Image (cartoon, rainbow, N blue to C red; front, side):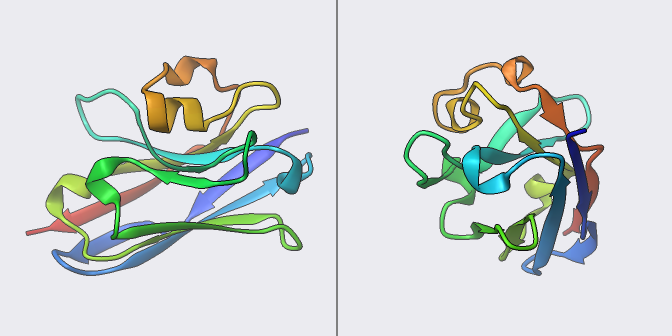
Length: 130
C-alpha cells in the first residue's frame, strides 16, 4: 500500500526556514518521480518542486528558485523540502505526491493538471507571518 506522510510544517516568521519531510512506504522511492505541491486557501494546488522520473533532475517553480531545495534519502524512504527565506505568499498546505506512470514534474514544470497524479499525502500546513 502506497503511503505518503508529510511533517515539518508550522508557523514561521518572514525570512525564516522550515524543512518538510515526506515519509514514503509501499514503493521504491528511487524508481519513481516525486514532487512537493502546495495549496493556499481559495487557490488551486500548484507544483513547487520535484525530482523527475524521466531524468532524475530536480525542478522548481520560479517563485521558489534559490530558496527551496528538494532532496531524497532512498535508504530512509524520505523526501525533504528545505525552505529558506520564507515569505507570506509561501503560506499554504504542502503535499508530497508520486505516480507510477506520470512524472510529477509535468505539473511543476509544465503546469499540467495535478489530477493526473495518483498518490498524495494529507499535507502539512506552513504559515509565514509578515
